Amino acid sequence: MKKALLGFLLTSTLLLSIFLSFNIYLDVPRDEIEKKYVDESSKFMILKDGSRIHYKDEGNKEGKVLVLVHGFADSLFTFDYMIPELENEFRLVRMDFPAFGLTGKVPSNNYGPEAFVKVIHEVTNNLGIQKFSIIGNSLGGSAAWRYALNYPEQLEGLILIAAAGIKNEEDKERKLAPKAVNSPLTGWLFRYVMPKFMIGNILKNVFVDESLITSKNVDRFHDFLILEGSREAIISMSTSGGYKNNSKVEIRNITTPTLIIHGANDNIIPVRTHEYFLSEIVNSKALIYDGVGHIPMLEAPIRTSKDIKEFMNRL
Image (cartoon, rainbow, N blue to C red; front, side):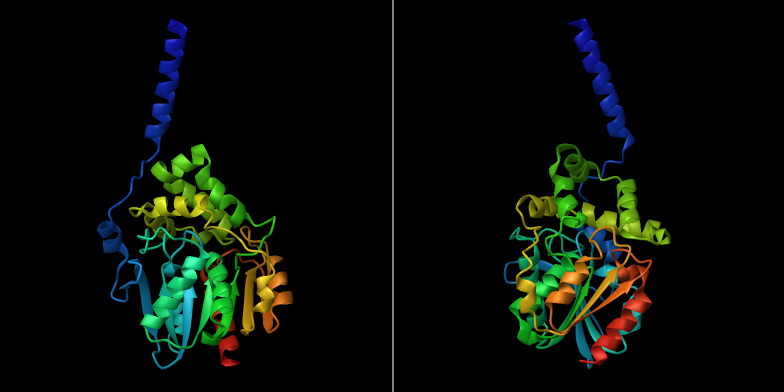
């Protein structure tokens, strides 16, 4: 009995020491995070379901409209490096999807690509935008090609950057994102601890250029995860099946002119995924960037912007 009690005390002490060695990150009130990231270009829109969507409407109001949508656990700030390259020529509308960025948790608890399609549709309608092209990265790419299927009459062009949404056994984003928050240990770490070094380690898989793993970028990803309700929303998204990939059948029905961009060194969504989009979308072209990972908008913003401008000018 004494040995068992001693073992229990030693184990408890060890676990407590490990627990205290981490920085414990409970949810941070929204106003604290907004104070840090909201600027003069930030706007918020209340949708019909009560969702409060953070968005930016920038650039040339007389130019063609580009709607930019981000990936899993990311935000509209992922396009920051591209804005100076595009703003003189295009009107640029970007938004934080539910569960992410400064949008965070929404009243409907409805997350995933289909919900994101509705967000894109309502935001653009509320802004009076009838025609536009859409740029989607990763999970945002999944929402983008779904939008092309649902509202082809609205789209002038479709730009898929390392787009998700296609079943692929090598797709780490599809396989690892739900598992990471559903397993007991990592789920607990994600929900209550979420130390910053975990973000740094994740970003090593995202970027080839590790100079991008700056304290500023780590802080941004981390801050939006610990925004009150965001982790709960991401867990809800993962456990409810909101984070899912569809069969490949639908893609061939896309008729919108499409540019496919993929980093050759993408460790999240395998580069060969682009081959399916290219073979199934009739009017499509693919560009593969050597030495670039999962987020070309950050690793190769000038090249990505240049290729997008050339594509848009041909429409």
